[in-house]
Image (cartoon, rainbow, N blue to C red; front, side, top):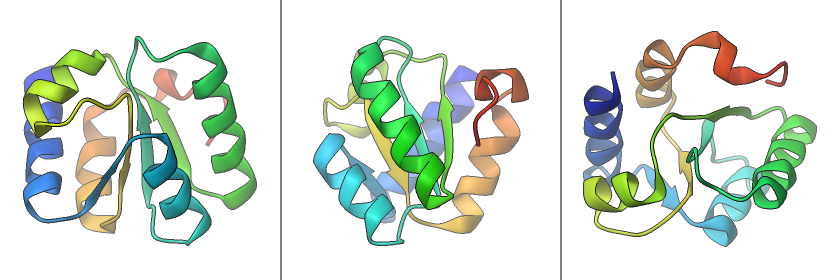
Length: 107
């Protein structure tokens, strides 16, 4: 599952449908471009909490994923713990790979 998830993130990056890092993800969420926001497993609780809240008030799906910042870095060639997928089809494909219990009650 992890390899397929990272592969889809790589495809999103190559297609120009991925925002990486807190500020670009925040802009994508507030601008209405983000379909899905993902947080790495080793992202700080403060940052994850802020983004989870922002997604909840803007009705953007948020998930924590079982990959590290370094694994994202290796996959998409940029070090980031937060990513926003800006394509609905790609976001749907990624959501199929993430178990619902990673949602932790927020969507």
